[in-house]
Length: 249
Image 1 (tube, rainbow, N blue to C red):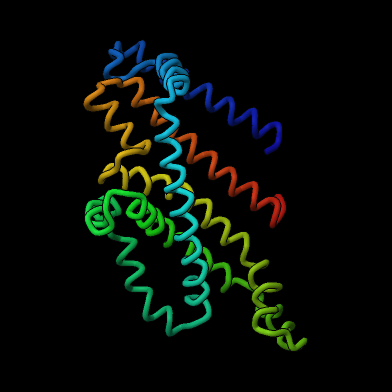
Image 2 (image 1 turned 120 degrees about the vertical axis):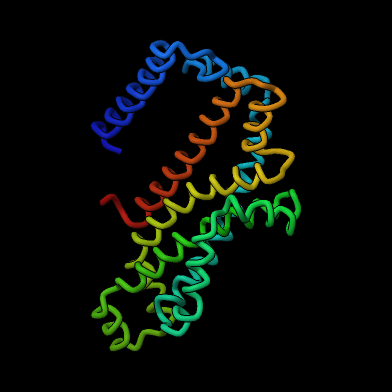
């Protein structure tokens, strides 16, 4: 990120905090409706010091990483098949679109019933929500490979594997990694939804506890901030990988 970009992001963050504070003050909202940002920040520091957030954060992170790995891995294979085979596309596309059109919030309780309230159901939910954007990005990326490059590879008697690794994948990487940017943030959403459907630990569980039995609204907002920070951090990690593999654009 350039210096100007960093200043812009920081400025937007400060403006958002100022707007939040203004809403609380001007609206006269009590802390149990909308706590001020300093109260949320203080509660976040306190919860981290007490170890309240850490085990829930670790549980959610494991779910997100495993779910993203499974979903993205399957999406790369299926996406390539969709790009290179009209038959595969005709057979699978209706089911993929139907699965994407079904809200994950509606599927989560059913998946929790099938796979149990443990880690497996969260990984499945994350994988499902990650799969579609990465598969579509892979399909688009592979189809956008210059036909001249492929013809050159054939003229040089390159094997199918050599064409894939030296021509198709490098050319499709920007599109694939763009899909992964979307997918990794959706994986966080999937983990939280899965935890709401049934779990013992996780940031989604902590949100429910803070809102319900604990009635600790600052803690609830602090947990939401943690969820947002996790999503942003993973998004930036994918950007870092993209810059290492593709270069800054």
